[in-house]
Length: 368
Ligand code: NAD
Ligand code: GLY
Image (cartoon, rainbow, N blue to C red; front, side, top):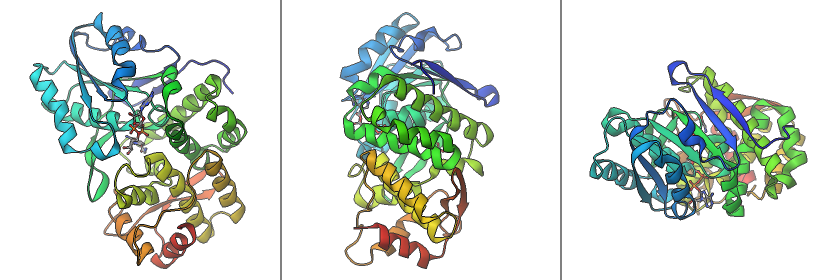
């Protein structure tokens, strides 16, 4: 395990390559990075919770490099990850006379990051952007890999673009102010990397979960570093999810159904993913791909992380039918057929279809 609290991970994507810088007191890294086109203007995009905590520090770090540093503060919450909020970013860009060289800085969790990235992909057909993730979930997953976008009332993350940031700056100190529920939500995406790719990391998470929950800086630094390494390895091979990258969606097919079915913001994304992983593991077991002991092992880990392991009911009557209906609106679905990320070994994942009857059995077994 890494013993220091600083590290760096490089994403290799040809001319779209970039680095993830991980450290404590790291905000200054945004201005010292040579390839940013400083001199013009910058727009910090944040939300009403994160801006009062960190926007001034980021602005101070950027002031030396940019002639003008503007800010836009969005409402906070998954329910605001929509067109209306996205437009606030375009309003700020236009009102401040921002041009093609303006650099957007996404300061916040995955909601701010996904929306800022989508705004950067679309404003004047593309301006540079930097991710400054302040949640564990955003540091280990959403700030990396270039998936950007917004939700639609009928489907999660259904409108967006692949658009890579120029740099990701993870300041581990920001995790100190994160509510405990949000820390747990981030742990869902950390846990995810074990069963899909790295058994040793799964074992490390199992033995360091208490340290992570207590925000031990060295443990958090290792979790962010290893998660980003795995994600970088996957994204480097399959940037646009034509195959391998889908494994990063382990737990997400069930999870997205939970988020959409309950209404965005009821369950946190990480909570839905945590429970979704339990359901996807159960499905893998039903399909004969893993044994029941492995399902129990994952369920216990998810539960210890402070995440729900029993799915919510999404309908009074045919609950499984409602899940199936929601899961058909998924980016992995093809010709109306749901494709699930399943576990087919201790640290190996695959994408498979499953008969509705089997999926129904899993939902019935996993829901309250
Ligand atoms: P979030 O962005 O809603 O942040 C969680 C909460 O924590 C918010 O209330 C936020 O204001 C607050 N917060 C953020 N940083 C804080 C800090 N340092 N101190 C105190 N409060 C802080 O949620 P999230 O879990 O970061 O991200 C979830 C989103 O990310 C979902 O929309 C999901 O779809 C998306 N996502 C995207 C990808 C991707 O590859 N693009 C991957 C995973 C998830
Ligand atoms: N979070 C899934 C992905 O980036 O592909």
